[in-house]
Length: 386
Image: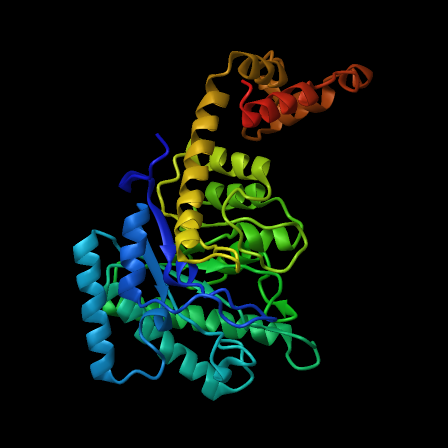
């Protein structure tokens, strides 16, 4: 009952299952696999979709003929397996050209090259079926604020996003953008560090309807924030276009652990938020296996991400059907209706009536809420004793 199905919309990036286990202190421990091999690996573990950066698929220095052969082979692998491409993105952080950023670089040549590279990558993504295009500004930041004016950086970011929105409209593409926030790493500080920053930035664009967010568990946890709350803000605003699922110890470097492997209760409430509110987008696992893994263990990692999500989805259904839990929620949210004449949309009459109403402040301060009991029931549910 925990087997992935297409309706679950589980996806992985080529860079996730293709991760070779390299880290800042160690060389690769797994051999490179081709995009075609990785598509077949994902089909084997039951994934629905595959996502890619432009250069995950086509090397940055590939000739046009090499590019066409790679894309043709990739398309054939998709056709052979039934795997689809829901999302694509651009690598604007690995090449030395982007050492000081891409859209926010102080060098206008780099900024123009970043636009060119992104337009080409958008074309590739659309060619392969992508409907969502993610932007992660991994190098869009500073180590010293002496080097960049932050207001200028914001303006450069806005100019780039407006330019690329117009490009998509001009080409007639059915494509939306999703902006991904991160507080730091690889830069000392990255601009638009949280999902809230991104939501505010989007409203300053020329085409805010085309642009949403792609929150990532690890990125908000790096900043010590409650990821579920940030996703809720995006959902409430109608801006959750995509989501990156993984796990992360709070305050650490970007660990990209298997989903649910560290903060199980946080993962539960995230799944509950998505499932209870009918989120219909991809569940994308932006994570990678431990450096100690071989490729059989990489498959176990990928299966584990999906299996944990489905187990937590089942736990959400049990939470929603649990009589004791629901009784406590009813008690917590009990409303006599006495305040209805004062609340809701403002009117001068309501405001006047509310100002004249006599509240028993002492009584308001005496009402306890059974949150300890409720939380314990959640813990018991997750431990499998309910």
